[in-house]
Every structure is written in structure tokens, then in C-alpha cells.
Image (cartoon, rainbow, N blue to C red; front, top):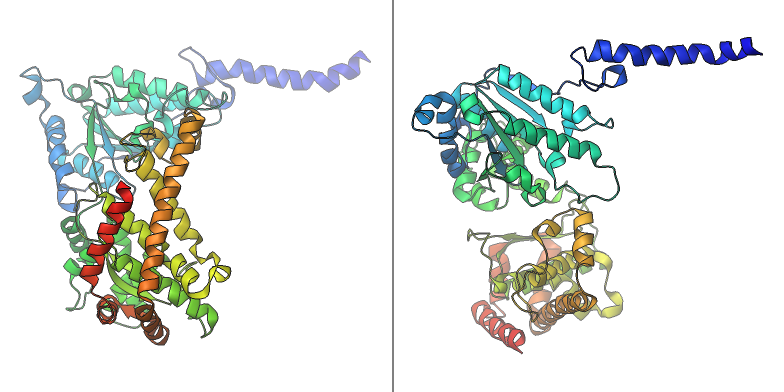
Length: 522
């Protein structure tokens, strides 16, 4: 019996004991805590480029950010100029901006301009399922960076490891918090530019970062890399169009005007898609047609098969013309670029608008309300023309969008009868479900009900304006639908010409603005 027990359990116990005995001696000869199977000291999974080969000339559309980083280049190239006068050079810089705006390329350009090695990795690469691995990788990264000084360390998506501590539910954040603590320790433990190491981190969610990460002496400098304006987009298009064969009829300035909201990555993808499309069509040059089709494809998806004539096609035509007419006749809305019945992605039809180049950070209540009216125009046309029983699910996406915008008017912009209050914390405005839940639970039931009522009031008022537009301009809408059914795509100029035969657009916009103002002050 004893022999059987030794045979059954002795070998496994000896095997485990040997692992526990070998791990400290083989994996951590210098002492300190260690884990079996080589987990005690985990090397960081970073890329090191001795010379990036990228300079500021390769980065377009972010002139302000490049100007801000000239100092960092000087810190890395000539640190003695600053230490001689007692200046403390920065340890960390936080790059903030939407995805695709060139944050990584800009970091590479800084290293290239300074002529120093470039270490790069993503914040998510620190984290593993085993506690202690992330902290070990942070130590390894900074050890190697110090050995290669002067150099630049770039941590992309730092919010994966640097988000606020204590905001999670349960105890699953121990590894991430240990990693963050180690990162803070390492940043305190070297002399920044004085030691020849500058850390640049990138995020598109700065509001969820831990406050300790942003205090002076760590990532105390913040540089914004926003979406490019029309001039920046043209510069980016020139960079990505330099190696493309463009038809003389292609104006990159016009393309830049047609692509508001596009990031640098979007514009690079646009030029590549246009080149692919030209090759598929057997052309030796990229023409305006390929550019236009590529913009449509990027924004709305692949082109589908045209609908056959019938009630469904007519309903979609009224829906899209409803969007276009309600938007055009409401003061503050962007111009219609085109209306089409050619399906793309999940949409059976589309109405395209050409945004102006006003500062996107400064949008008036009139403009926001006009966007809601235009968004509800399709649903309004369905109800007025076909009757409430014939209203379809085609407006589901429109309803989600206008409700989201109306809620931001109430909780973020203070544009409701509740008053100019900020009713949502910045962190709760992002995509973090937990933070949104916590923000909602912190409100009183009465305040939450008041917010819901204010949102409903805004949407209801906009819907009444949209239905009034459709009723007053039914003849124009019918004619526009007939033309759209025949041509399947209606350009903005032709659309406005037909609409102008029935209504004075400028006068209607002024009257709508006056009626809307009365509703807002009632």
C-alpha cells in the first residue's frame, strides 16, 4: 500500500519541488521574488530602431505639434544647453488625439530629427495574466533605454495600463495597477532629458488616465494632435499622392474640402483605394471618378446592387429626399452634396453633406438642432407621405444618432431648459461602460428623469419642424423623388435648383430659425 502511494504521488511531488527549487536560482540569480517557468523576469516586447529614418518633413498636417516638439529635439541633441542654465528637461510628454492622426509617426520623426534610438511598444503589451509580469517588463524596458541613452521611448495606447486606479469592479486589476505603479516608479527614477531618456506616450482617451501619471515630473507636458483642417488635409494628400499617377483634372485642394473629419490614416487609405480602383478599371491614372468612389466606399462601405423599381425603392427615395429637404431648409445645416439610391454597406440609400470649414470645436445650438432636424427628415417624410402605419425601420440609425446628440446637448453643452450645467463627467462621456454606469448612479432619480425629459423635448421639437418642412414642400419633394428614381444619384447643385423652383430657400431658413427660437424660449 505504501509503495503504491509513493509510486502514484512521489514522482509528481518531486517534479513540482524541482521546479520550485530551480526557478529562483535559474530565473532570478540576483535574488528577489520569482515565479516558476521563467515568469519572474519577463522581457518587454518592444521594437528598437537605431535610426527611424523619419523626419518632420515626412509628417504633414500637424504643424502646431511639430513646433511644440522642436524643444524636445533640442533636449535630446544638446542637453548641455539647458542643464548649463539650470533647466530641468522634461521626462515625459503625452500625445493626445484621435486614432489615425499620426501620433506614432510624429514620435518617430522626433527620434529621427534628434538622431537617437527609438523604443516603441503598446501599453497593452505590458499586461499578462500572471501578476508581476507587467512590472517586470516595465523594468526591463527602462533598463535597456538607460543603457542606450540618449534615446526616445514611445508607449502607444498608454490608457491600457495607465487608467485611473480603483475605477474597476472586482479584483481583476491587480496586474494592471502593479504595472502602473512600476511605471510611475521608473519615471521618478531617471533624470528625464538630463539622463538622455525622454518618454512619449499616446492616447485618445486622456480623461481616463490616472492623475499620478500626469503630475509634474512625469507626463506633465501635453501635446494635442487633432484631426487636420482643410489646409492640413491638402498637405497630407500631397505627401500620399506624390507617388501616385494623378489625372490633371484631380485637384487635391477640392479633395481636401470634400474630406472633413478624415484623419491622416484615412487620407492615406483614400489615395490607396483610389489607386486600386483605377487599376481595377484598367486606367493608367487616378481620375476624379476614382477619388469620389473611394470617398464613398471609405465612409459608407462597398457599393451594392441597385434596387429594382417598386414601393421599397420609392420609400427609400422619399426617405433620402426628406433628409435633404429638411436639412437644406433649416438654418445652420451643411449643404447637400448629393443624394443617391445606390446601396452602400447596410444603407439602402444615402444623403451626403459637405461640411463647412468652421472650427469644429465651436458649434452653435442652431447648428446642432439643424443636424437633428435633418437626421429626422427621413422618418418625417415616411410618416407624412405614407402614413404612420407604413413607417419603416430604416430610420433606426438616425434615431440613435439624434438621441445621442440631443443627450449631449443636455448633459454636456447645457443647451436645455435644465440650464447651463455640466451633468456628465468627462470620463463618463467616453466608451467606458463602467464609468457611464457610475455617472448615472451618482445622479438623483429626479435629475435623471429631468434629463430624459429634456432630451425628449429637443427631439420632439425637431421632429415637428421636420414634418412641417415635408408638409409645406410636398410638391417639391414629389418632383425630387421622381428625378432621383430616374437617375439614382442627384447632385447637390441640381437638387437645390429643383427645390428653388418651389421655395425660397433663404427665406424658409430664416423663418424656420425664427420659429425654432420661439420654441426654445417658450
